[in-house]
Length: 95
Image 1 (spheres, rainbow, N blue to C red):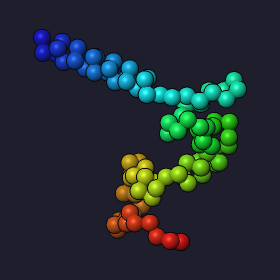
Image 2: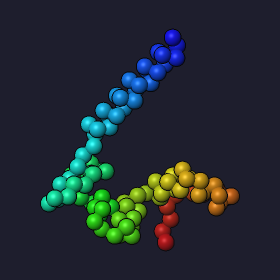
Image 3: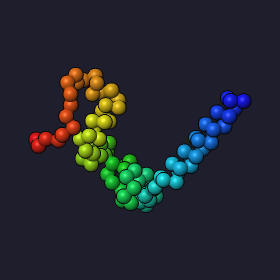
Image 4: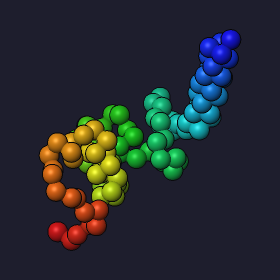
């Protein structure tokens, strides 16, 4: 009985999460193309445009990210742990 109840609760949770995600997704239409508006700003950014070269899209996205956001991305994939043993500062410095 507990297993059935757990499965029902898990199923309801998954359904409610999926429907909530569908409601928050926004799209931008340009001609016959449809693009997901990841940052919900209502305009097509370079990194959202799949027609652009990947290098250009990556550079555009990186230019919009803070140093902390970049480090979190590296850390979440284990890169920081594998490549740096000392502490990393989250304070941006002038180059």
